[in-house]
Amino acid sequence: MKILKKLIFAVCLLFLLAAGCIFYAFRIEPFRISVNTFAMGAEESSAEPVKIVQISDIHIKEDFTYKNLEKIVERCNRLSPDFVVFTGDLYDNYAKYSDDSRIISELKKLHAEYGKIAIWGNRDYGGGAVRKYQEIMELSGFTLLKNESMFITTKNGKKIQFTGLDDALLGQPSMPDMTGTDAADFKILLTHEPDSVLTFPDSGHPLILSGHSHGGQVRIPFLPFVNERAVAATSLSSKYSGGMYRVGEEGKQKLYVNTGLGTTHISARFGVVPEITVFEIYI
Image (tube, rainbow, N blue to C red; front, side):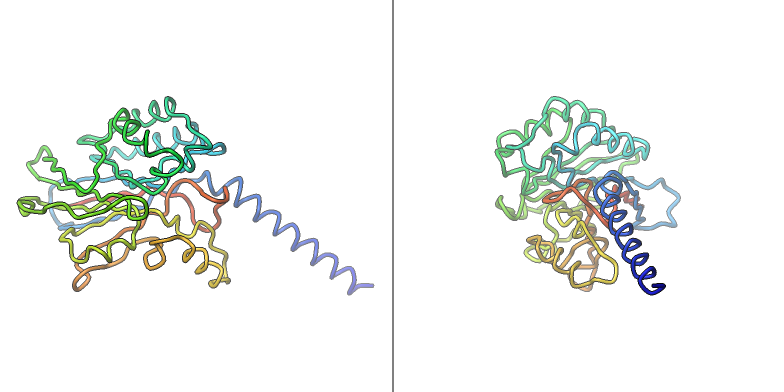
């Protein structure tokens, strides 16, 4: 009898644990936001760093609306960014759910000292989003780059170059002419799918920012094979799936894969908290 009671207790405990994990994965973690900060360059410099805030993979949909975007914008603004970069995937499936006017209204509230820059993601092409994405981003105050570069000079005379590539899955990415870019004090490459950097090795950008992977979106402790399958299921993010990597010749370039703010396929996250990333560049 005692063994039976212990067995029933263990089963009930496991059931409650599983139920708690499922509740957390669907109702809590997808709505959390972590802020990860990295410093680059000559940190001993007495000058103030240029602060770049990266957001990615928002995936607006029925259960992640402008109200959730409002929280993201508020959190970004508290960071007082010099630049905000968005590395693609605004909506999850534009054909199923869109709310352009309120999304534009929220994105307009996103403040940056020198500018807001965006690139295309695969979801920005699919579901009819290709017809509206550029208009949405431009009305929101973003400069949308597609295989092109832009230069912005800060108040202390430092010239920052941003190069944005087209989406690698549904677009036609190509590196723009880099003639004359040696004048830049710091160069940043934006590409939605991280594994696409293998197509453009040694591009000359010390920092590369991407997204797309969601970090697998669900990482179950002690089950690495499940986590590996989740990452491998996402095209062009199986090699670089989340966090900081050294790439290029002798690892001179740093690639950061932002694990995103929204969800896709299932509206759950576990072990991969949505993130905003801050890069403090000392130049």
